[in-house]
Image 1 (cartoon, rainbow, N blue to C red):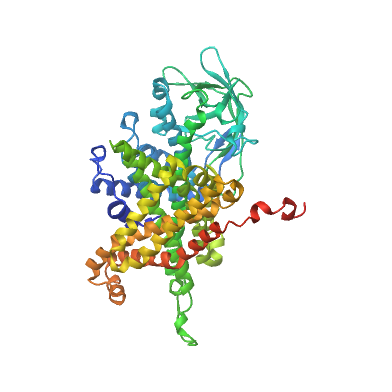
Image 2 (spheres, one colour; image 1 turned 120 degrees about the horizontal axis):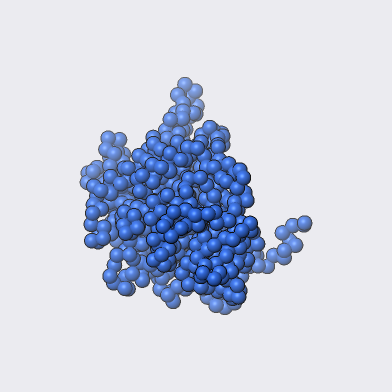
Length: 615
């Protein structure tokens, strides 16, 4: 059952053989044995307790009555066990109840739990991000008041940015903060689409709220960040009176039914008190910390849903018997075979496998960069790893969630008609995964961020470091005879990506802003494809020597024979051939995408609005 969320062998490969863990005194207690135990316990909780809530949570959904929200009944036991295991703060500072484990290990543990139920784990993701804001920007008093309860999951957290008239344009918000005599603020406004904004899992909910202090500048320059609890907190830490954070409704959605997407009215029926978090008019830059964490979490949601969809489809294809083998020809006496033996089903499964494994390596690599940046004493290295995370963030969020929906769609196709009905799990996973492309900054915004900010960050050095990391793998893999050709092809793709980036930057400088940004999303797709090719090549580079050791040969007929009896040989052969499939069959399409970007067609900006169609 566990393998219907993620492939443990593949997770172990990335953790211990490919990306690995940062060697640092801070993480000295997290040896291989300990890491394996953590992942095993995370998998057990995911499979035994969280996974059963996926379908029931979808069917029951959240119930809104008289300003209160009840989450699906099954969520309560799972949340209690999640809290008991202290999973919410596994990568955080032990001073505030965290376990201090490496981010890459926490990512592996989270993949199982998020894959078991994305709706359920969204309550945890928002709480963690809000708590980290308090840790980074809060006063000692705020930290003492909130952190332990938030990191333990006793209290929840959210992120209050979006308003009905200021969706992605946060600078247009109208929520106000009016100073009170005691140094606190009266917060007044309405926020929409708030994940976990109201629920009965926790005793209190702490809302980081973006608002404008009266008289502050317009736009994002005048936005401040405030902490607004659902219930006020007394000096002794006990809960006080209701803070007039009114839930006025929850959305009926396509998916993630188990998570309450709430509309919150602050200060309409009485005084809503908030305290400034950080500095006045610096709220947007402070909130970017949580936004970037949330974007990485959404990327993980995309990976986890794609991984679960792939595992379900693989299991189904191995067991579903339908149709004769294509080599049976006109032999009507031939028996029907499992659908995994049909070429087109194998093509779809291999496409899914390549995407899932490439995305897993990319997300774990990103987490590893966070660990490196957080442990190195070398300021240059710290800047480099931090910059790599900045460049990777829009790819991790935007590209991975785009591909997640694609993988989920393939899973439905493998199931055929059964995939489209709610009796089977891939239907829900596809519905749930659709929101990942939208929230925490639409993927169009991620593309614009990559083009408009990340290409020029540190004078272009940040993107150069990203290219250098890929070229290092290309050079190392190219030294293996069996990988010389695929390494050359990935190297050509990296060079083309660099040329495409330079061309887009020149277009922007020359005044072709509209044209350049009309190609932002295709450029994001290309960067993601090349990143996946990089990760798969890296995997093959690691796997080939081990395959030779296990199989005694790299001749495929002999390797295939060995793989039938040796699971490690089968796994390592899979890494080699998955990389070959993606690089030889999918990467050429990426080269075509970049050719199209370089072609600079002007149709998007030229087409008159009226030509889109009549009203």
